[in-house]
Amino acid sequence: MDAEDLLLREFLGIRDPDRTRHASAWIRSRQRCDGTWTNHHGGPPNLSTTVEAYLALRLAGDPPDAAHMFRAAEWVREAGGLKSARVFTHIWLALFGLWQWDDVPAIPPEIVLLPRWFPLNPYDFACWARQTIVALSIVLAERPVHRLGLDLAELSRGKSPPPSRRRLSDRGFELLDRVLRAYQRHPLRPLRRLALSAAESWVARRQEADGSWGGIQPPWVYSLIALRLRGYPLEHPAIRRGLEGLDRFTIREDDGHRLEACQSPVWDTALAILALRDAGVEADDPALVAGADWLLGEEVLVRGDWAARRPSLEPGGWAFEFANVNYPDVDDTAEVVMALAQVKHPDVTRNEGAISRGVGWLLGMQSRGGGWGAFDADNTRELARRLPFFDFGEVIDPPSADVTAHGLEMLSAVGQGGGSAAREATSFLLAEQQPEGSWFGRWGVNHIYGTAAVVPALVAAGLPPSHPAIRRALSWLRAHQNEDGGWGEDPRSYQDDGWVGRGESTASQTAWALLAFEAVGDRSTAPERGVEWLLETQRPDGGWDEQQFTGTGFPGDFYINYHLYRLVFPVMALGRWARADVEAPHEPAAALVP
Image (cartoon, rainbow, N blue to C red):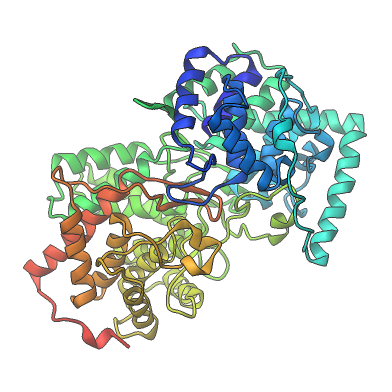
């Protein structure tokens, strides 16, 4: 993202020496000894990230024969060269004449004209992909080239990529891509003009109050490029707000400037309130009331893209970011409702009204089969994953175990744990359990997160601790406890089963595991050792060190280091452990072990 920020500013003609100096310093500080860059702390080298970082440093003036650049280029060639990079990297290269537009898979802007019942219309894609592809469809139609006066010949050589092993059905999509590329070169002009105008309007309408698109980096940068290509001057309010918003997402540190992927104030505030309540802070404490009051002001009361599948559903709920009214999400809504229910807000009517609307919206967003996706209901069209254009990240938003668990836990917290929606969610979760006993974590790394979300939810909904699913889950957690007493799981577990439940112990993941044990009153040796690990690794200032990325954006591709995870979840876990000691100490739950 830091590289792409420099590339965006170069394309728009606004890259300045000061920002270039600080951003390139940050990029250099993240280079590994082998010359590469990776996508998360401790992860393996990533080809596309390395290519984009290398290009940004060339843009900043680093010569290709400099030692750090030579090492990077050598590794890129060994890994397959530019031709083996992802599609989005090829798009960035094409913007600067370093890749042929004809060699980029096609997404024509006519996609916005497709009716919602037609396969592969924009609403078949998850909200983050939807916003990105509509903006990129304008870029791919315009096919601009901004020459840099440099080439990347030193990266172009490399091993040939392995032959395709796509299934026959996927080869059909490759044929579709060839047809779309041919149309891209020779579109029907009246239809193309109509499509570009419609796509431009679609993008412009979805800019948020803070200047972002969806509050996240990918659609943000491509939307700015798209609107600029449609003739918006740099002084246009939409462009100006967009760039000002990116400045607010820029973190300035001693070793350089870096761009945040997103900001999560709603999520963080709800979790902080829940953690403080677990730690014994009174429900009417001024800090908690202030947090709840702020959350009440962030309620989303307008219809967004979710209404495409739920047109009669009344709005309600919360988004993740400071400003994202188009895309409230189920996960944040569940956590906010639970937080508001834990606070004695002086305006009871206002508080209860927001809780009621949030519960109603969440119930209306339940998908077929009983689960919940994050942003849309029934966003499950698998065809979207097969287009050659999408070789990076998840592009649909199917129901997941972690989001469903949070929804179920919320329903139980407001007295609806025995209703039909909760029963359907329980059935969904039981069906999603992995054979070994864990649950997949869509938005947190990974099986530890999923398992820690599901077990408390099932218990809250009325499943007894002796239920086979819960017994198997706790057995799985015991089997994956580290020798030091903590728990950890590397993001590589999304792509390599050998990493499932395995990784260096972290404060957040250890706390997640403890929350599962505490939900069933298990005070056996495994959770006791986890508590000891948290106590032993706590810093003098009360926090914990955690460089690892334990949040997930796109499984297998994009991860997040939530800076409050290392604090709120240990406080939750330790608070519940201490409270249980005071209120009703449990006997060791050896009977829960299969």
